[in-house]
Structure formats: C-alpha cells, structure tokens
Length: 465
Ligand code: F0G
Image 1 (spheres, rainbow, N blue to C red):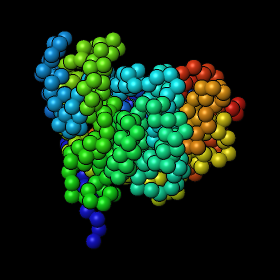
Image 2 (cartoon, rainbow, N blue to C red):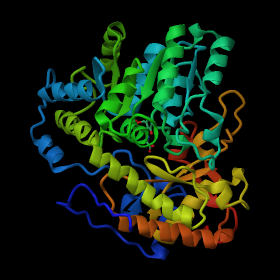
Image 3 (cartoon, rainbow, N blue to C red):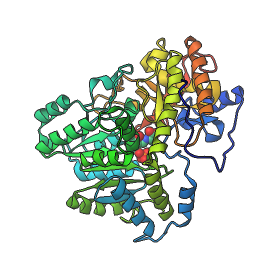
Image 4 (spheres, rainbow, N blue to C red):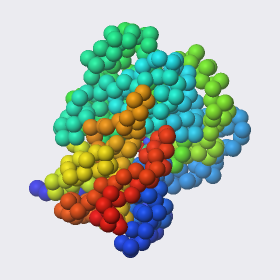
C-alpha cells in the first residue's frame, strides 16, 4: 500500500506576499551585495533559506502572548513565565535571560574561561568559538572523525569521540579545561544529532575529572526527535521526556531562543550550580540587563515561554524534521552531493563535490550560493572557508574539510511547494555546474568575516553563471 502522506500540524491565519525579481534584477542585487548572500536585501529574495535563526513563524498563541507581556523593569510576570518554562522543559534550576544565544555564550565564556584554557567541543560554531577565543581560550574539536566526511551515513554524527576527549585531558590536564561545550545538534556538521548514550558517557567522563558540561541547546528539540527516531528504547517516549533526560547529563546550557524556542529574538543561560548562577547574575546586568529581563522585552519573554512549550510538541517536531528531509530526499534522488544523513534544520550542499573545478581558495561554496540566488532567488549561506576565518596564530585561512552551502529551513514558514521550487533550482544548477565560476575576495573584515566580506567573480564575465 502507498505510504500515507502527512501534512502541517497547523493552518495558516496570516500570509506574507513574496517578491519575485527578474533574472536581471537579481544580477544587479547580487552585484550590490558583493556576491555575499548575507548582504542581499530581504526584499530581493524569493525563498529565504539563509537561516532558521529568528525566522520562525509564531503561532496565534504567541502573537496573543505579546499583548500580555509585562514590561516592568524588574520582576516582570513574563520573566517568571519564561523561567518556569525553562525549568519545566529543560529541567535546569537557574535561568538568566539574554538577548540571544551569543549573549549567553559571552557570559558563560567570561565566567568560566581563563587565559590558556582549552574548550573541547563537537565541532565549532562561529560565535561560540569567537567568545571562547576572546576570553583567552582555545577551542579543540573532539567530534568523531566521520562528522567531517559529508557522505558518512551515521545515525549520530554529532557524537564526541571519547578517546579524543580523554587525550586532551591527558595532554593539557583537567584543570585547563573549564567545560566541554556539547552542541545538540551540530550546526556546522549538517545539523547532525548527538546520541543519548554519548551525552551520558561524556558527562560521566567529565564528572570523573571535575570538568563541567555545558550544552549548546540551540536545536535541542531537533536532537531529541532524532533520538526518538533512531536510538533504541526511545521510540515510545515523548519529546519532553527525552529532553529532560538529555539535559540531566549536563551542568547547564546556552540557548538561542531564535531556533528551537520559536521566537524571532531571545536566549538564555541556564545552570544548576548556585555559586555560578550568583556570579552570572552579576555579569548579566553589565552586558544584557536586569536578571529579570536580560536584553528582552517582556513581550519577547512571554512569546518565548509559549514557544518553548510549542516546540516540545511531538507533532510539531515530527513535521519539522520531515519537511527538511522532504527537500533533502529530492536532492539525494537527483544525485546532488549533500551532507548525509539529512540533518535537523538544513540541507548542506557539498560545494567541493558540486564544483570540483573550483579550488577552495576560490570560495566554491560562496560561488554556489551566489549562483543559486541568480538562478531562482533562493538565498542560502556559505559554510566553508569564508566562515572558518583565519588561524589565530599563523594568520592563514582555516581550510575546513566541509565546504558547503547551507539551505536552512525556517520553522513553520514555507510549504513543501517552496521546497519543490528549491529542489528544481538546485537540480538544474547541478546540470550546468561546469559553467559556474570562482570568486576572489575584495574586502575582508577582521572578525566573523563571512557576514560582511565582499567578492567579485574571477572570470571577467559579468556573473557567476
Ligand atoms: N549556537 C549555534 C549552534 C547556532 O547555530 C547559533 C546561531 C548560535 C549558537 C548563536 O545564537 O544567533 O542567537 O546569537 N546560529 C545562527 C545560524 C546565526 O544561522 O546558524 P544567536
């Protein structure tokens, strides 16, 4: 029997019309943007897959929640609602609101890292590593080797390699490792999840050495769904239960509410240690705001509290993961090189395999992102050599193994028809891939260069394709 199809677990109450530019208009727009999709104007974009961050559609309940937000400077009702939601769904005792994820990363890095420390993690994330380095720390990648291989088909490609972690402890000493940063899921590896077994083992190992474990919980609900789907013993458990168990193997987390809390802005730092909480309360007032609003309006906290509950709904997350897979499967079927298995929030096109004629120092992923925009007005993001920046000591370009274009799916925003449009465009580009040319960098900002870098096509033709 044919497999029965499923649909979105919501219906649409408000719509936002999209702009559809001509090919000529897109050429001009891309040129104005210095061939960097980050610099395109939103109104020049048809389907925006730049990021899933802060781009979710809120529910009617969340829009309603905005109206009852309590804007008191101190002791806001909305803060207590947010704190209660975090305590209930994540299980941590202490919570501090921040304006977004990197606000929490800043606080955690300042509180925990001393000059010369090492922070092991399962692959880096740009802002996370930047804060670690700003505080004198060195990030050490201890993810399993397969995570760097775009075609390795593993259920839990985000796992930490315990041997690598143990070796780091032996080499530098536990006292030089303030905490392990465990991202659930791993954005830069393709949205790959971490298994419950690995979380448990990492925590046990760290406890033996007095090392803390902090999760980057940004996409924790997506991770929970993969555990439910793939890890033995979790099939009949609710997402809420799985989340609770996940967080029980950690000492705290940083969170970008802009992803798995279904809001457009917000974040938090959470922990179980009272002494650390008291110290972070001192710091939050310097960088974010009072510990009862921390850079968010009361209405934002209210919407985020509601979003935390909605995201932990089994039907919501099932559809979310399946929509991403719906796009990914079409590309796989057409023979497009993508990171496999398909992760939680995005499809990652393997630009090295897509454009083997463009060497990495001619920015193949950046070129592919530009070509996709020219072809269909779909905006993706470079996640390769530009994003990886330069080595702190040598000044050389970091050359990541994975050179990718990320097509990130916002939550509850696009339908599967939009996914079809994206698939058609990528497949057509693949058919004429040898016509795509490389880029040279015209302007390089000193930090997080991918945001503002500008490029031009290497070949004197006027466009990339
Ligand atoms: N950690 C991860 C894994 C992230 O993906 C992000 C943001 C952050 C931390 C920082 O959170 O943006 O709220 O300050 N990722 C966005 C993205 C920017 O497009 O992947 P933030």
